Length: 312
Image (cartoon, rainbow, N blue to C red):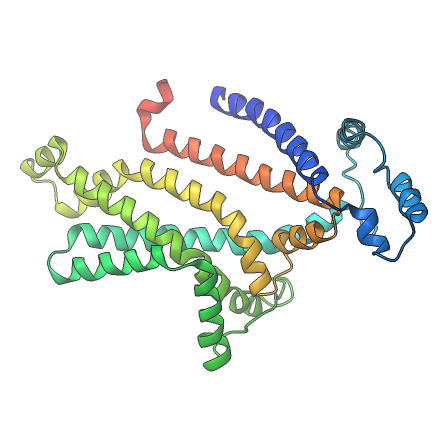
């Protein structure tokens, strides 16, 4: 409970910082929503009138204060261009992004730990092959890999759809099929990092005194590897998986554009092009909340994997 309370307290500060930085960065752009709405043919009078109507002529600190007042009352504003409430837009897009991120991170963790474990226990040519695969997986740019997968598996072989998203409620099979390529593209690079951490952790643990003691006591090798060695490398893996998940939020912006997925990344991209500040703020806060939840889950995994952490 102490850890949760501490994390929640720092999370409130983080949300304020993120919202303030978003306002500041958007104010530095050479254009604003009024100019985007009116285009380049509007007169200066029309431009100033629309700025006043949207509240963009007020000082930045006043705009930010008004925004915070609305947020505390449960109103995240409405889109300047569509008029749709920001909460509704995010609620419609969030399941798509989570459908990409959660399976992607699960595949990343499972594949990475499997390859790392096999690499640590293998000898000779198999270890070198696995190490090369991990190296290539970490070096390949994500955007290039996504485009290649679309070209090969969607266009040439026609195994999976190239673009689009099918809601799970509409068709579970169509939902799974549409996400195979984006999930694979998201997971491959992260799996390489998890594999390297797992391999190094297992090799280091195998040289520890407690492992030699367990072997001398006649404990089966499978029990030593699965119950003791992997558990002791779990904290390192959990840290890396948490970092990869957070990094995948940024990667999802590009993947949603490549595979035409209507998620938060696509919403943030279109809102940024339109200078739609209420939507940008809502997406930024939502992604920050996801980061906070992931960090709390990582902290709780430390407590589960290492009982000593509970007394610190």
